[in-house]
Amino acid sequence: GNAVLDQADKSDHSIEAETSVGSKSVGTVARGGSFGELALLYLVPRAATVKAVQDSVVWVIDRTNFKEILMKVSDEKIQEYVQYISHVEMLNPLLTDEKKAVAQALVEMHFVKDEVVLQQGELGNTFYILYQGEVRVLQDGAETKRLTASQAHG
Image 1 (tube, rainbow, N blue to C red):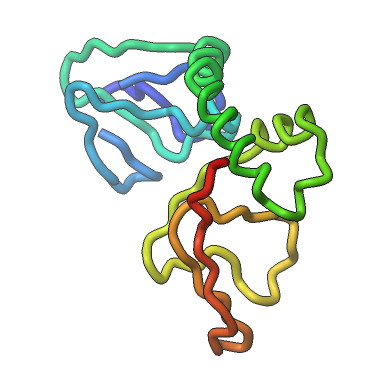
Image 2 (cartoon, helix red, strand yellow):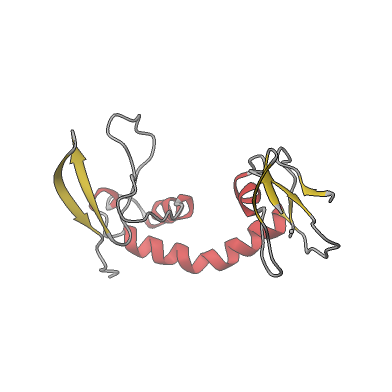
């Protein structure tokens, strides 16, 4: 079939169909499935090529509208984050507007049990706030402490 999205494309469209990386098929998208959102969110090249495997109808939304909709939905989440980071001791000196700016910059990431969040020895260019769950801190392979997310929201 024709390529619906090409792997190297940086286009502003999110569409719907068989996904492949290079010549290797990596999955299919069924009715109601979606793809292309990562390239829209982060303006990075497409991670895979998507081809229609049969005559298909796809809905498309451009990057501007996609982000605008997400921002409206995320206003509540931003307020929740502001409340939460108000309890992060290191960020206490920040003014309310500064805390809101931090909250807007946060990217929520999910990790499964035993997945490495950061690796000892890596260059540190990211600050982490534990929002939910528990993590183990290891130094030279030995556990030195455990951190649990505070569920106190005020």
